[in-house]
Length: 280
Image 1 (tube, helix red, strand yellow):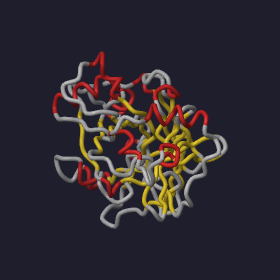
Image 2 (tube, rainbow, N blue to C red; image 1 turned 180 degrees about the vertical axis):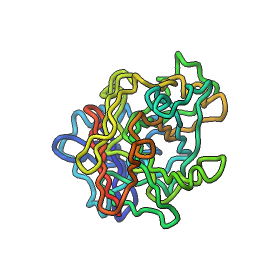
Image 3 (cartoon, helix red, strand yellow; image 1 turned 30 degrees about the vertical axis):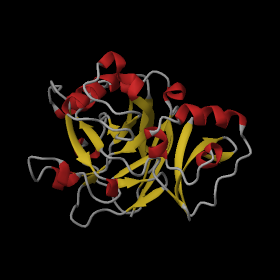
Image 4 (cartoon, rainbow, N blue to C red; image 1 turned 180 degrees about the horizontal axis):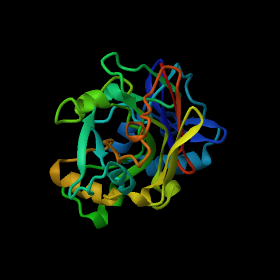
């Protein structure tokens, strides 16, 4: 399934994206409005998938605005320096442990959003990433069992204010401005994605290819990330983990490339779709 969220007068509703439009998840399950995080927490995705196969005429409620696929996570965990190519372009050794930092809900933005550059920064960069969403509570999970805890995958743009990021020993100041985490366009369930170490994706800035990679280049794979993170903290259903960016970021190019008003960023993947963001 390809799961989305959209705003209605009743609240934020989960839906199943099909070739003919969006099926309202709450209408299929007889309970509206019904958000995606709650669907995941209650373990109802398989039930929803079965209903979506046979109920093709359910119309979604009138949408009044778009939403990130999962707009209300408990945690947004971002992994840094997790592609071999990105470590190499920085002249850095691959880390022995995952490097991670946090974003917050204010950072989330849906596909096709316009994101304003923060007034406090003059050096905002793009980062194409693949993120996954947890499907159940995880504590000290073994890597061999970790993929069973993943509800789905989506594209993620870790917009980064580099001058703020490196102004302190911690990266977080450069990672948390409003709209700094565009994601989507849908949360795609593992059965449609295939092997998590074979997800290919690319980023184009104003039509020019800047990044192109596959998750086969990850230093810490998806199951390894689930296992290690769950040994450091309890992961909750709906938590978002973005797995890092490959080589080609603007801050390491010569000359450096910083985002400007009017820019358009498109992250695309054969399995995860297209995440388009405009800069204002």
